[in-house]
Amino acid sequence: MAVPAEIAARVVDPRTYADGSIFESYRWFRQNDPFALIESQDFDPFRVVTRHADIMEVGRRNDVFHNGLRPVLNTKVGERKMRELTGGGPMVKSLIQMDDEEHRKYRGLTSAWFQPNNVKRMEADIRAMARAAVDRMAACGETCDFVNEVSLHYPLRVIMSILGVPEEDEALMLKLTQEIFGSTDPDLNKSGYNSLDLKDEEQKVDVSTILSLMGYFQELTKRKRANPSDDLASVIANAQVDGAPIPDLEMMGYYIITATAGHDTTSSSTAGAMWALAENPAEFRKLKDDPSLMGTMIDEAIRYTSPVKHFMRTAMQDTQVGDQKLSEGEWLMLCFASGNRDETVFEDPDAFRVDRKPNRHVAFGYGAHLCLGQYLGKMEMRILFEELIPRLESVEIDGDAAMSQALFVNGPKRLPIRYKLR
Ligand code: HEM
Image 1 (spheres, protein in one colour):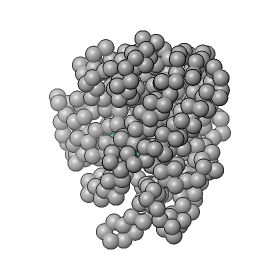
Image 2 (cartoon, protein in one colour):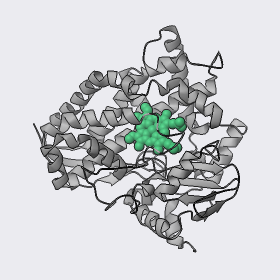
Image 3 (spheres, protein in one colour):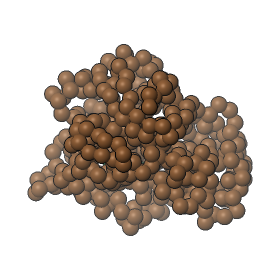
Image 4 (cartoon, helix red, strand yellow):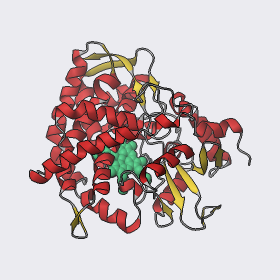
């Protein structure tokens, strides 16, 4: 079936991820063309994978569907610039760019560190950070921008302490990660230009941001080799693969993926939870009356917000998923946020229900690349809301809340609320 132009255009227009109209396109795709081909002059052709079951199948078959060098949607110009700069390879190489044996080896270096029993030992420290975040909100009085005051800083503080980055360097880290993830939002990118004009690619591939991060982490590696502790940066800095220290490209990739993937995603889900609670007083009340719903509320907020909108996969051979035939080389966009609104899996998928159970969302992806930080991210959120909800008497939206404009990771960028906090 031919895809109506307006439905297709939204997929590559960051504004639709902010105003929510992308969800109308997702619905159309799920019902009419769940592997629709998107052709646009600025991007190589790709297919949108929009049904829950198909996203899971593609994710699970990682031997056939590779992440490789193209794990995120990038414009043709952006890809060319990157190739010119690096001679064909990536600038940094993280788990996201690896497949098969290499991916297993590198993921194995930190997978034990990310297991629930290990991250749990940080609970007391994280709780202290959560209390500080709630106190900061209380100090604001009865109104604040929840993003600016709480959800941006708290997950950053957690991830930076895990990486062993001192508090005074956090502002720099925040700036750098925001520039990488928010690069299509005029409020969040470096120069403030509106990069919706895709011809303005010179500025969009922001190499200096990546170089700044690399410089920072090279220094950190030196320190963690000289004085190792039990933090994640020490594990990475002293890791070995096949009996040798890991090369610079992969080492930088590890730090950068942890610093960026671990921060913006959790910030967005945390703010998404607060937005949904403020808009749904009955759900807020349910949670207050029954704190045992905290775990299901967190999962629901992550499903509902789905901050990671996509990852890409490339078919390594001719194959088939359900009825859909796919040729070698086809590029697929796994639309996690669409899978999480699939009406064949979730009852009333556009509703936020704090007691939704089961909740088999794919916001953390699926298969070999399943989010490494999922337990940590959920624990951070749980602890914050355990500290916040008993003290929070009421909350409502108080002004012009807004989502960021980004095709890859997006979430609330502004969330003015009015509240009573004990
Ligand atoms: C991978 C989502 C929090 C570290 C991913 C993927 C998604 C995701 C969708 C890709 C899965 C795929 O391609 O199939 C989220 C969400 C989070 C979150 C929604 C918060 C609510 C975190 C945290 C950390 C983290 C806190 C670390 C501190 C990673 C890493 C990968 C990853 C290292 C790459 C795994 C691999 O390729 O093997 N995440 N994430 N994430 N995430 Fe998260």
